[in-house]
Image (tube, rainbow, N blue to C red; front, side, top):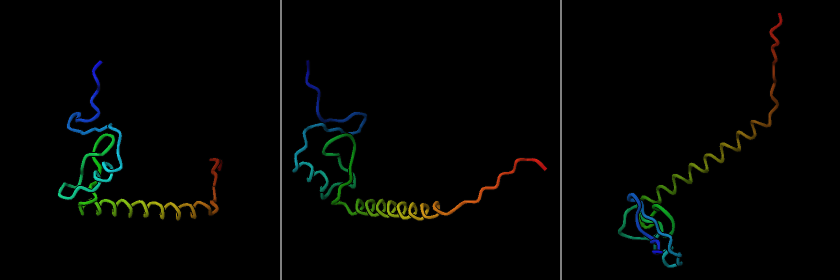
Length: 93
């Protein structure tokens, strides 16, 4: 039986299932001179290149959205703790 390849591309999407090393993991996320997206060091697809300034904007926007969502959830929880008046109309006049 032939060995299956551990890295390559399927329909233009890269994959790599080789055992990751610490050096390869670190160098994959910091590639000066490359674009904003680079191939993942392990798995399928792309990841952010932290050597590119555009990646930091994406990280900051994602962090701000997460913070905003969590702060909205806390205020909704406080509103949910207040009593609610329920009026039932049985339809009889």
